[in-house]
Length: 197
Image (cartoon, rainbow, N blue to C red):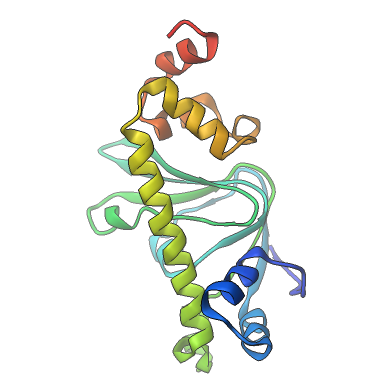
């Protein structure tokens, strides 16, 4: 459901100012191209083009990105307030279906390249738009590096890592989803949580 644009504080704007040194005019251009939407809890985006061609940024809420491979569901990432929704870029084109599911009512914003192209808006060729896309890619790389490091840990340390990184994760994410993300069985996760691992 679309909601009105506004000039609210956005952390990614602060990051753009810091990393790319954007001006007030450049910031205004970016803000003018943002589309704000409110998704209800449980809503699923399942179009790979929509997921991979947009850079979704969560203002308030929780989302999980997952894919289905050989009939099995794999949780790729969880995104919370002031984070980009991170899609599994490497599985696209291999037949996997990619999804974003909102685990709470979630408000987000994004720039839609296809809509800009249809309307012949110059935003696509601007430094502002490229800065926005590059910031999302930087976040993607940082995330992939963190997850690669996490997956080398022992199972109990993975669980501690995710609680440290996302203190509110257990409020929105099921244990089955969390176990999939940590690449451990649900039974192992139960043992870790009960102190019997």
